Image (cartoon, rainbow, N blue to C red; front, top):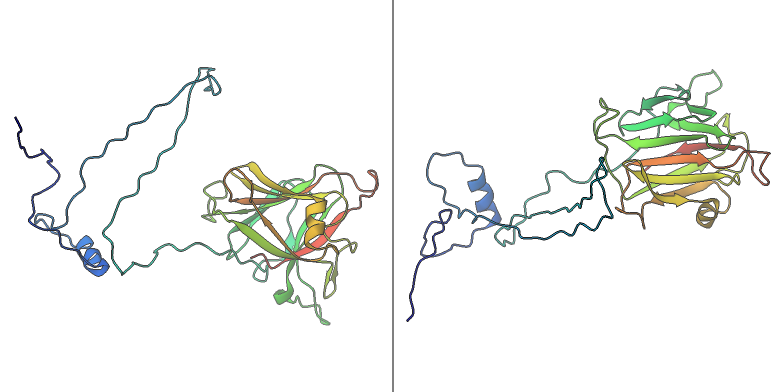
Length: 273
């Protein structure tokens, strides 16, 4: 014997037909504030079924076995030839240092760069400075401002992090898939101490996400991009766990004039994009 019945779906109202609506119609209805009964079909309750295996490979802070899982749910929408504009397009990093106040960033201190919200942090580098060349009268040429850094001892480093809010240096950060920058040894009357650029024999550049290194650019990697050590370079997080980064760290891995073939890291940085 067969029976027919109606499913009890309290979140769905009966309707004779479903009218295909344009994107504009949906946007207009979404912005309507009214006490009337909604005219757009509501979603049914959704349940997620899953299983987790606790195999002892992970443990919490108390040593108890645990397992983690991450889920995401995307709300469906009616197909339409009209697509609403993205209200929050991806941020584009652009820092040429030209609107920065010149001065040294001392070891253990940091400075938020204007416009780009980059947090320039001197972890323990020998020297990091925002500097501009001067003209014949001694006036700074601010349209040629650069960052000058010097490191010569293994373990010295400085970093550039991308803040979401410049007023919260320890808060959320923006993430990027790549960063391009120029390396110089001279601009106007501002000179680096040598002509090696990034290829000093003991410098690495790391991209990090939430403090974890995603990719390391060694001397060999940097040489492959530009054999002179000067000019345009690009870093990214390809091959890392998440594929993006929120910090770039310049690290001196060997000590100059002690380790064979290593000299001081001394160069000018400009035009971060």
